[in-house]
Length: 432
Ligand SMILES: Cc1cc2nc3c(=O)[nH]c(=O)nc-3n(C[C@H](O)[C@H](O)[C@H](O)COP(=O)(O)OP(=O)(O)OC[C@H]3O[C@@H](n4cnc5c(N)ncnc54)[C@H](O)[C@@H]3O)c2cc1C
Image 1 (cartoon, rainbow, N blue to C red):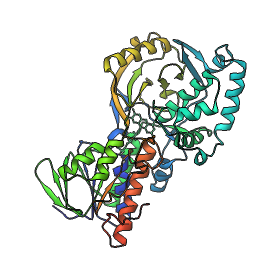
Image 2: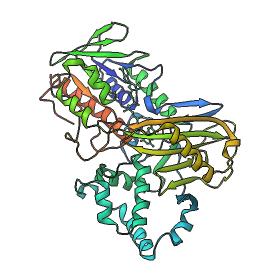
Image 3: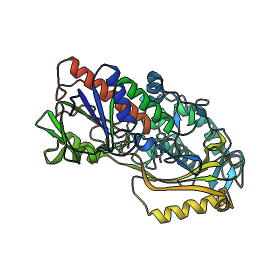
Image 4: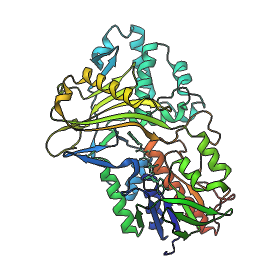
């Protein structure tokens, strides 16, 4: 096999970003992806003329994805959701303004909600102590309904349904960004357009792409020596970035393992969701764009209201149930999602053109939570020179795709710094 400076395992956003940054810095890079296509959880699929992302995806401007994609020249065209939101409470769907002036919210609750909303965008997230989202909300808000509303908003913002574990600071930071006008962006023609552009940039920078290639082992003796593949081939290499989930990364090291990666794997808490995406000929209630579940961990959105996702005018809608860190019964989740759709868009079944149900899909392999022994995993792996990690779980405070992109950049920069300093990573690596 040809010799390369760096091998990257995993062709999701993290691996693709790392590959471009290294290749643009003049390194010879090979990227191995076990699936037949690149993109990982950022791919889109085409069904009966409609484009489906893997669940409801949005980018919040001002975060790592936005910054890194701009640096790399990746265009992010899209549309932002409007304030036309409804609320699901007590199995009733009500427009948010009606809900807020209704008796569901006391007079003092209305005042508290208004004050908190105005204050939220201005809170300095760095000054928030390392407490859970629930402790912070209960400290800040007195009215139970106002608390419910903010739990619901934060849930949609982070995909996470774990207020007892989620650290408040990172959530507030990303919320402050999301509150800016037009900052939440649904991507025109789906996230595949981003993956395709990353691929083109990587190829133009000289990255060798090997899809359908399953890496099974990284051989090391305190320094990276070789990687091995499912088909029995192997390749000598000195620098490897594993942009794979923590359990896979740990498995790749085999029995020889290493304590840091094992710890990162054990401390990781996945964020899961049950996601139903449909393309519908027409919407029974066309002016119902999005619905926020307040007493249920549900969110509905008609993305086609804001972006183009089909050739023939069908509407692509997502309904998601946030499952937190525990997997739940796929059939029960599907039934619940359908029952709630009956409330939001009664008669939707007659309009279905295509359907994608993803039970217990992983939105992130870890997030900033209490009990994370190592707050910031990677990018260097202290025990193994030349070995680095990336992926949305290797977050240093970012969330979801922001964490994936930021960790990819961190790993690439760490490799470059080590190479420049004549080091091969390991214990003395400077973290960036
Ligand atoms: C339902 C859903 C909704 C989401 N919504 C949002 C959102 O609104 N906003 C947002 O910012 N983010 C969102 N995300 C998260 C975002 O999609 C992910 O954070 C991001 O795509 C993860 O990228 P990654 O590179 O870390 O991992 P992945 O995309 O998982 O990439 C890892 C890659 O490694 C490959 N691989 C694994 N093992 C091997 C091996 N042994 N050899 C070779 N290759 C291997 C896999 O095939 C995969 O392609 C959502 C995710 C989901 C599922």
